[in-house]
Image 1: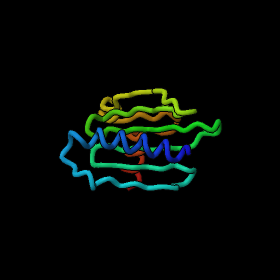
Image 2: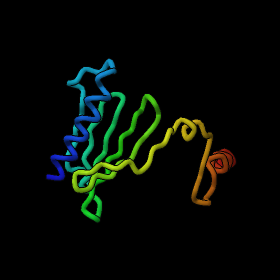
Image 3: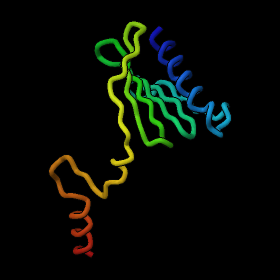
Image 4: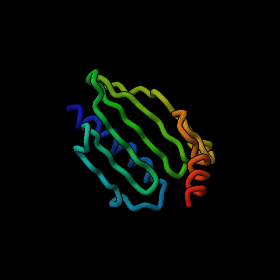
Length: 116
């Protein structure tokens, strides 16, 4: 039942996404049973990923590659709730960002240039 609901949601999202695009409806790639129970579907402009969560609900991630944005939804007991939305354009505009405290990409480039 959960798989049916999540695949239905994915289909509706992709149908609306491709309705205004130049991508023919036949150009939808669907993959089921990826590692960790993740299922995905994609068109040239949209990608969806559905995964089962430990609490029995599902998480749906919708990525709009043209708009450089994403939304995360939680599906539980027939209810769909928006959990997060983000425009990623500024993320992709960064030259570098390292959230781990290790060497930055610039430091790695400098070290590799010294070792040549």
